[in-house]
Image (cartoon, rainbow, N blue to C red; front, side):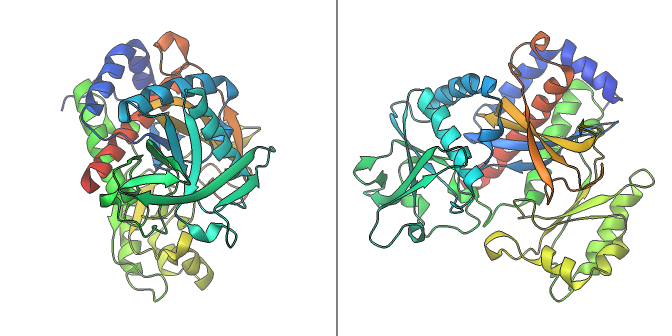
Length: 406
């Protein structure tokens, strides 16, 4: 492949000057793919590259978006829901079960409002019947900001999903299924997006970044871009058991091999392939650190949310962030609906350095007002354009994951 764009500055200039062509390319690649209703992508920007470092198909945090972006989010949500279920009027949302998290309840209230403002009725419902008081069909909650949140039991009748007497025309799944519900989704006729079949009980970051590598390489080949400018190098390692130390030498070797491909002083992120909520992550500078992990760290790496045991690992290039907020390191999270950027926020952590895992103790969220990020290049900054492109390519990769399970 002949490469014409070799630096980050050249990439930024190219994206801005050729926005319509780039946008049309991405939209064409989405055709006939099962793009998830929504997603969020963590993007790191260093001095030399932009790279996605995580992708969530069941995102929380809509309450962290700029209020200025809600109108566009409702518009895109309405267009997407109409495409997925043309005659829908009643939209259900499957929430997570951690209902004591009041900020998560703010997220649910915000997501519900975005869908309501698109012209739909919204109901929250769950198949986790342990949520509800004995003899009760619904649970009334109050979010951190004082919003009323009511979740009711979900039922399946003749293949359709109901909440009490209300039949759901479509479901937005916001439960990551790391603890899968005992439902035979093949027998459910109600449209559900993203599909619960792609939950963390089976999803792997290794597979996602394998697909992203292909999507990014195709994009770069088409536009003659050096592919290292838009992705982090990685290696996948299987059959590791942190509890009994099985496979740690193999994992350490992968760490050393990847570090040897990076500039001196680099670090890598060792991530549980099924990890979520920032769990199962260590940042290391040598394979020896893996082999010599103490029991406390091994325990942290061994088991995640809902007791998922981590045996598949992603060894990922540590991308040093240059983004700062009040002189603290930050990274960008972009939110998408139908693979279209609708806003984002900054994850900030004053307890970490520029190469640290910011999705950990000490993190706070700060709003990133994106405005009309999906419009013409003149309407947004260079960085917003780049974050949008990276996040949209990552969402195309996630659609290939979904295609595997449908």
